[in-house]
Each structure stands twice: as structure tokens, then as C-alpha cells.
Image (cartoon, rainbow, N blue to C red; front, side):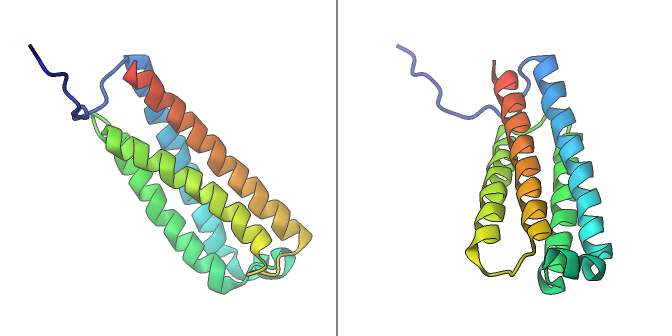
Length: 142
């Protein structure tokens, strides 16, 4: 009698179309995260008053986004994407989206109406990437 294996496969190989979908989602997420990180850093002072987002928040966010972008692009560039890494990306994106909404309404930052819209749109974009990457992960697993 054989025992079923509970081990996670070493890399996502599933369907070629699923792997391509996941890789594309990771790349677009990586490039857009990097671009947004640059905007947060370069525009930290200019966006402070219209958004109500202090530079003490926008600069660390921008730096973190650049680091995240590099990680996303690195993962997307691997010949075989690790299921653990892809799952981590989905989880981090989902938690980031929830965190952005929580921060928006927490009162920690005195955001303007434009700032609230900015944060909620950002949370929506991050949630969409989490969904796209989750869909890619599921397609690869078929």
C-alpha cells in the first residue's frame, strides 16, 4: 500500500498557459509596484499636502515598494516559479490591501479626501493583483 505524498512540488510546472499567466501577472505587478514606489519617493514632498500623507510615511512606503518590486521581478524571472513564493506574493498582496484600507480609516494619518481616494484605489489595485496571481497559481496547479 502506498502513502500519498503531502509534499509541496518543488516548482510550479502545471500547464504552460497557467505558468505564463502567473509570470505575466508577477511581472506587471513588479513593474507597476516599482513605478509607484518611484512616484512615492520622488513625489513625497509634492504629494504631502494634497493627500495628507506625511513624507515620514510616503518615503518608507516608497522604499518598501521598490524592494517588493525587485522581489516580484526576481520571482517572475525564475525558470520555475516556486509555489511557496507565489503563495507568499498572493498573501502579502492581500494583507497589504487590507492594511491600506485599515490605515486609511485608522486615524493614524490625517488624509485629505484625495488621500483617502488615493489609498483606497491603491488597495483595490493591490487586491486585483492578489486575485490575478491567485488565479495564475490555481491555473498552474491544474
